[in-house]
Amino acid sequence: MSADFEEGAFLGLPTADGPADIAIVPLAYELTTSYGTGACDGPKACLDASAQVELFDDRLGMDLPAGQAMTTEPVWEGNAPTLRGQLDELAAHARSFYHGGVFPLFLGGEHGLLPPVMHAARHHPAVGGDLSTLTIVQLDAHADLRSSLDGEIFSHACAASRSLDVGAGRLLQAGVRAYSEEELIRINNDERISTSFAKDTQHPHRGAEAWEAWLDELRSLSGPVHFTLDIDGLDGALVPATGTPVPGGLSFWQAVETVETLFANPDVVVISADVNEIVAQSDGVLTQFTAALLATKIVANHVLARQEGRWKSMVSTKEVPFNGAFFEEFDGDSISAV
Ligand SMILES: [Mn+2]
Image (cartoon, rainbow, N blue to C red; front, side):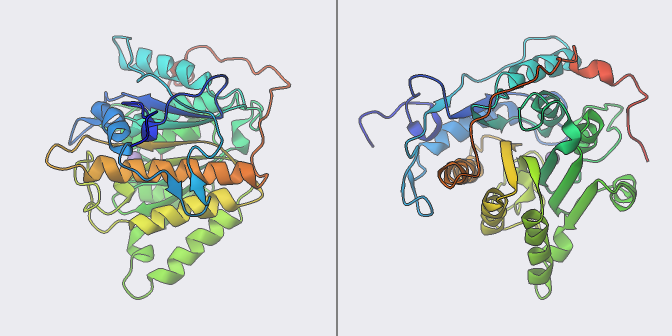
C-alpha cells in the first residue's frame, strides 16, 4: 500500500488538486427497493472494496489514475422528506457533473437514480439540451420498463421507462431475464428499445452468436452514451447481496467486454456511467468487490478513450435551461404505458 493511500476514496487514491478529470460520485439513494434492501450502503462498501483492486490496468499498461485528476465526491444523501423531493435533489446534484470537463461515474444506490441523472445529462455539451441524441446502454437482469410498480412510477423497476420519458432517444439492454408481459410488449413495440435477452446470449450452444450481435450493436452506435450497469445483470453468483440476484446472468468477462467495446467505438462519446444496486455483503465481500472491479474497468476504459482521442473535454456553448423540478414533467400525461 502506497504512502498516499486515502481511506474511503475510490481505489484509495487521494483527491487531486484542481479541477477533476474523473469524478466518482457515490449516491446513497434507496427509497423504492422492493425485495432485498441495503442499496444505500452500497456505494460506501464499493469504495471500501476498491482499496483491494489492483491499480495496474493491462490495457492502459500503467497504474490508475494514469495521469488523470480523479476525485471521490462525498457520499450524497437526500435530505428531502419525500421521494419526489429527493429526485429533485439528485437531479440538481448530478447536473453539477455534466459541464463537459469531467467524466462522472455514479455509484448507487438503487436503479431509481437513473431518471433524474438522465434529466441532468441534457446539460452535457455533447447532448446540448436534446436528450433524444442520447443512447442509454444498460446491463440488467430486469428490463426496468414497467409503467409503475406497487403504484410508484419512480420505482427502480421503472428506471428505463422513466428515462425514456425524460427524453433519452435510445435504449440498448443486455443480460435481461426477468420481465413482465407489459415489459415484453413494450420491448417488441417501442422502436427506441433494443433488448438482448440472457436466454439467448447465455445459451450454452448458441450463445456466442447472440453475444456477438450485442457487441455489433455497440460497435454501430454513434453519439453521446450513458452506460448504466445494474450489477444484477451479472450472474447472481457474482453479486449475491444485490437487492434481487437472478441466476443465468452475464459473466464478469461479458460485462468487461461490453465496457471495452462501448468505449472503443470511435463514433461514441460516453459522457457518464453508473454502477448501481450495490449492496454491502456482510458474509463476504464478493458483491461490493465485483462492483468495484467493474467500476475500475469503466474508469480505465474512459482513460484509454482520452488517451486515444475519443473523449475530449468540452465546454457548453449554449445555455440549457434547467426545467425546474425534475418530477414536474411527470404530471401523468408523459407516463408511457403499453
Ligand atoms: Mn435495474
